[in-house]
Length: 476
Image (cartoon, rainbow, N blue to C red):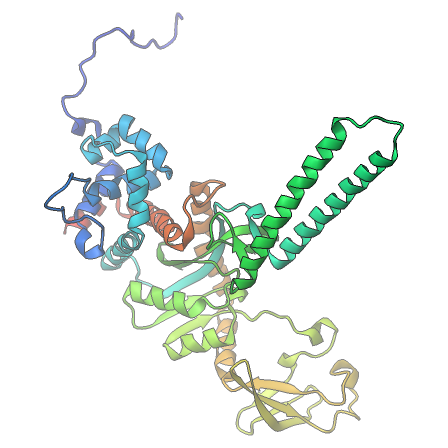
């Protein structure tokens, strides 16, 4: 190995630094983790065993376990077994924990038993960001993304999937029974092991049918007519045109530094009911009296936009164009202009549609407008196939119209939303790997997501302020 850089012989004696602290530079992110956790009030946050018991075997301090997890998620190490190995060989973790080496079960139980407190730690860092003035703008972008649960698709059942699986089993049983009947009628061929094999297959299929029938009973008792066997809280939902079994993670991201100011893990497959709650969480986290939120058309829900308006939150949400009339090449409701002074609609043919009746549908008060002059109208073929065109108006429709005017005046708002809120999801999914979540149920998954969000925010702020600047701010 001539003319190459040579390493030392393995038998060569080496004088290593005298202390672990010499291995960790002053700008190492592990020092940020140490300072951040030491500044937390773990008792107030609700961590178990934050106060030691007077009797019994001593346990690990929650601060040590929390440091292990924050370090692990900062370095994309999420598994408790991998964290156990790292405490035994990773110099940075040895420095961080004082060379303590908890076993994987202890590490896993800490995350499981302190899910609420871990979420509180994530909120504490958001409070720190607010105190440092990193949320100077009052605009946040809200979005949701689907993350995979540990539950495989074959272990999730809806009524349609269960019915289809039962039909497949019945067809297989019928096919095997027909094969057995054929073998019995064909006396020229001696019966061999094939017939016994078919009997075993039929028995297994019948056993599977009994299991599915038991699942069917549980499925009927389920509120949403869906059941997951591995993770009972996971739900089947669409993501990118494909079905996955997982969770819908909601985030609110500030538009200045792209920090995640609020997050929530839900098992609803859509975003329609998340706007007002996420906006409220973002406003509380940023300590603002007024706030503006922008979201995509998946969040358009009249009641949610009204709730934001009543709470003093300015919303920017485009309306989904799902009009059947427009699809058929006819005028949609936007072609009818509302005159608030007279409480009438003006149609494209300049006819006046007056108020005729009101009714309540799904808790919403709707007004109906129409005119009796549609029969002789030259534009009737472009308007309605019925006798007259009827226009419905929600009692709070003015709130939606006001929001549409805001959107028209801010044409770049959707571009701001896209470049703000979609990047954090891509980063988080890359860190979490193809499996996404490792824990089960909403509480455990929520704790896991909080650790990911905390790691993301920590890295962002370290880039903005530097490690030493952030440590100085934490101890100020």
